[in-house]
Length: 184
Image 1 (cartoon, helix red, strand yellow):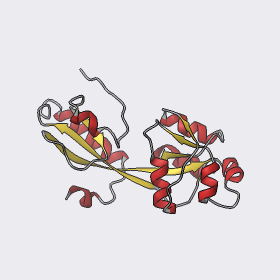
Image 2: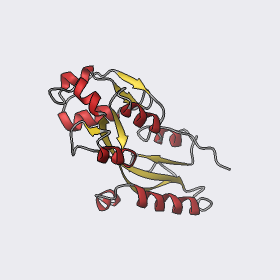
Image 3: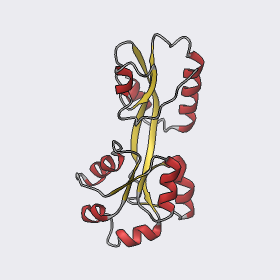
């Protein structure tokens, strides 16, 4: 039987270190003692908002000052994808005002309803971007988060089929760009 817990990919490695989890998806490449690590792919996030939100909060473009005032969305208090994107895109560290919405679908809905801007998975927002219902804050500036499947060697045999299915799903749904770089 499985017990599935949701933890931010930037923090899931701690659950393995504490002995709470036998498998996890993490952004950490290096396996902890007793675990194997396999590259899954890059999760692509896009900073998106509705056109109404963009015109209200970014009439002169996406600047540090505008970002400080525009409500952003975070998944949990430890979620800092929006800060990572700002650092990558503007080379800035900013304090943001944030709504906390612990739901990926809730993020997309909040963006569509002009509540805030969020770091949304590309596969959840690309159709809205194509229709013009959402726009990227800075077009062509995604945040790529490499993800790794960590599995305890103790349970690896029993979870062989699970691991195979996870790898297949990752290959189908995650960006495989730079795969060789992450495998080395």
